[in-house]
Amino acid sequence: MSESMLPSNTMDGTPSTLVQEREALPEALQAPTRSKPLGWQLGLSLANLVVWMCTIPLFEILLPNQIALLAPRDKVALFAIISLAGGITAILGNLLAGALSDRTTSRFGRRRPWIIVGALLSAFSLVLLGLAPNIPIVAIGVILFQFSINIDIASLAALVPDQVPVSQRATVSAFAGLALPLGTIVGLTLISQAFGGSQIAYFVLAAALVIVLVIFVALIHDAVLPRGIMLPFRVKAFLVSFVRPLKVRDFSLTLIGRILVIFGYYTVLEYLLYYLQDVVHQTQAQATQDVAIFQILATGVLIVATISSGVISDRVQRRKPFVITAAILLALGLAILAFFPVWTINLVGAVFVGAGFGIFLSGDLALQTQVLPDSKDNGKDLSILNTANLLPQIIVSIVAGIVIAIFGSYSALFLIGAISACIGGILIFPIKLVR
Image (cartoon, rainbow, N blue to C red; front, side):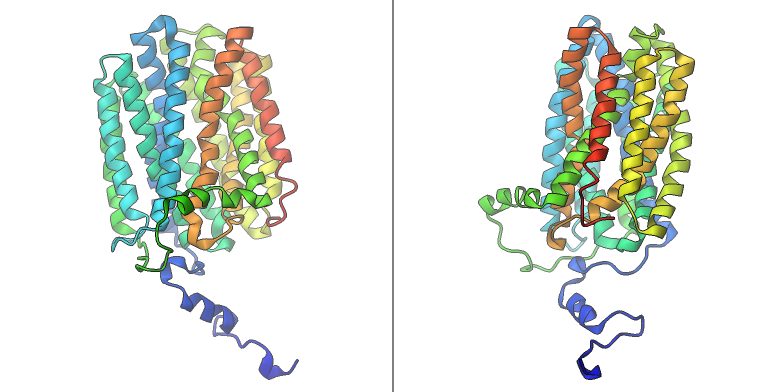
């Protein structure tokens, strides 16, 4: 081949043909090439932190205690039913926000309008829960909260493939991933120590959510999608678009693997409070405090595991080994809880759970973004993968109700979670698009 036929390079070494292809697309659809500064990463982490600060403590402390107060005899069944209903609406909110934000042509960008809408609706639902006098109003509040908070989750997640180059995604994923445990621990500490689990915590969380997300949206750039770029909206084509990526093998394996690993994590996340009360025989007040202690310890380990594994993953440009290792460590933590219902030994389980989930958080989002089939559908396709954060809530509620009714034991539930995590890790092996 003659020298004149070879593609010329730009000043930064990028082949000029690739530059021309990028320039033919609007900015909103171009593959990102510029690394994001530390301030942007911290902003994304803080935005995600306040979302999880509202979400996880709600299901670990506020909601279980509220249901136990209103209907103590049926607390397990009602918690499972309400969590199930909320999980279904969470999936709908996530999928709709991801898909519709892909098509949004607002002058404020594609993702920012949805972040604000989700924040306002979520805050309203938290206030409703804080004022709820009975179980039906609690159920309505949870359903609305799950739908609206997942609008935020989907929109924030889509910012990563929109704006972060592949070479930096594990590091950014680590920052975003830290938001979940840090948000959890901040929320749990705030609720258990500052407010003693009282209903006023709902109002504080609502205010924090709106303030942080409004500031974040005001400070970030979100490229505008010009009108006419996307195909005209058709209901049938819109619905079919949710099925199309599932035909891609690596995409489907990632989805199923995530569901199984996160299912394992949710078994301890959602039922730790009742486990400490009913198996370790702690009082409600003691169990509430020990849930926070468990999470503090797990989070400390998780922070180290997330940051270190994220940096190493980007350096070696490998994702699969980290996700697989994470699944194994998480399974070991669950097994410890299952076989040793003693509080001091439970803390050892917290170390394994924190290490496993921390490594998972750093590699998982990076892996997801690298199996997305089409840049035009980043938000929608990522929201499909994000259902793996939500489906386990539904599955855990169903499985927990059945297992506890049959065996009367949380140990069986944790063992099922451990097995699920191991299988989820195994499913990552055959993925070909990612090393």
